Image (cartoon, rainbow, N blue to C red; front, side, top):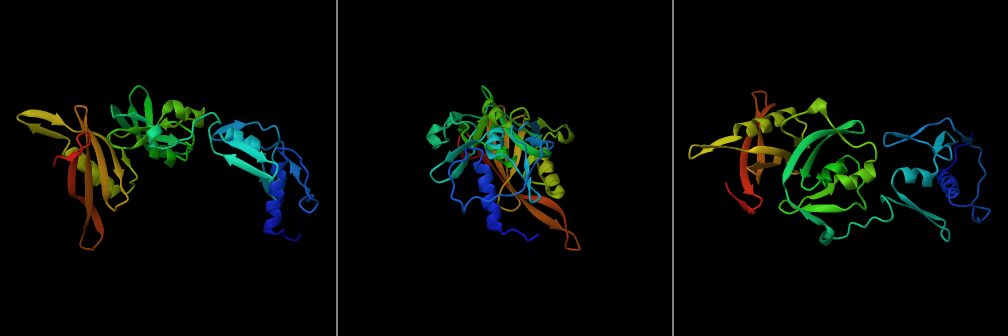
Length: 285
């Protein structure tokens, strides 16, 4: 059989999806008759949940085609059809009644009260997640986006001192439905390091945290309570969020490699650090 050109496949896909909205009137040179098969025995799983489509998958030329409007509905998107231009618009919004994100003036302001980090399992992978408990539970937006969870149209909050954006658990329930992230009991650790997988670097970071966790001032014992370490874009550079008696600080940590006689990296050492009082906005040491 002669292989169909790429543009013909696109035309067929557009025609098939268009039938979900109405037949309409098409020019004769746009329509193309094909032999295809409806497979009602095929199962469709969306975000871990089996869904029942009113229109079964269609198989043509060894490819599967799904009704775009039905599928988009299960993905939390809005689909619009413009008859005059024969255009399908897929808008990744949770629902049409939710507000757009807008500018920063629309963010609810929150402050760090009871932040905590943990590893969470979601859709077959494990992610580091920073959360903050205030009047409700908030998830840091950057962590949610790494999971591939779309947050378009969800109300967001901005943390006063760090400037980081969060999304409440109540809002996120609109997009993850009955399959929320779960605490990863296979990777339950006291210190969560986000974005780093190198075992030597992880060892150096954890050693630093434990070495400087406790200190004494005027014979009074104090302790730094770790929240999370985030890897920055600059090589071997990290920001460490910690608190002391409910007051929050961040430390910038820089690592330097230590090489052995074979000129191979055998370890990492902490080259420099600085501590900033994020609530006062100044470096304290």
